[in-house]
Length: 227
Image (cartoon, rainbow, N blue to C red):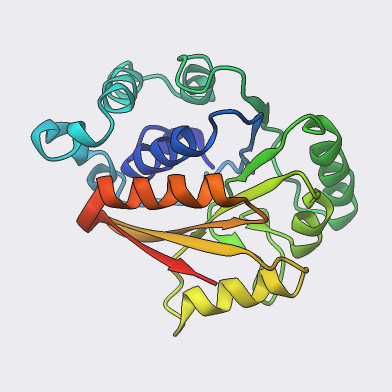
């Protein structure tokens, strides 16, 4: 998660899904903050959806209007994330937003703080830039050990995974979570500019029903997978 990306089309889908799932639960969001100062991406296309309300606004009007206001304000340097946390879309949510350290020893301390700071939550969303660790752990990845530490009998987990280009990515993600003991796994793939998976694990029938309802409403923009 990077401040300058706050309000992009990925956030539009992300917030709509979390609002669908959070009713009756204590949501916690772990931003997995990075600074991204060395990157020079084409940011514009990820915000163009705000210029097309006829195409997107009906999917989540309140979220669309709020994100447009945040983006149009021109706030930067963590102010967009401040605005998002305080805009009222996610009332009652717990937030963890310490920047992810690069050093392994500091990462362990950071991870313990993450687990302790959201102990009251029974729905946890992890928001790294890239997703689950591959061959190595970076600040843009969730470590498998961190997912394992956050698992709890009464808690559902949600995490985002950028499409990597590997074959059978949905199956790969499900197998990664199964390796940690997760048995109930669903994936929502957003097809908005770039492809992203939202992985839901350790959840109940109520959340499954809400995922199905969300998928019906969003239609062509999402695909769902069950494992």
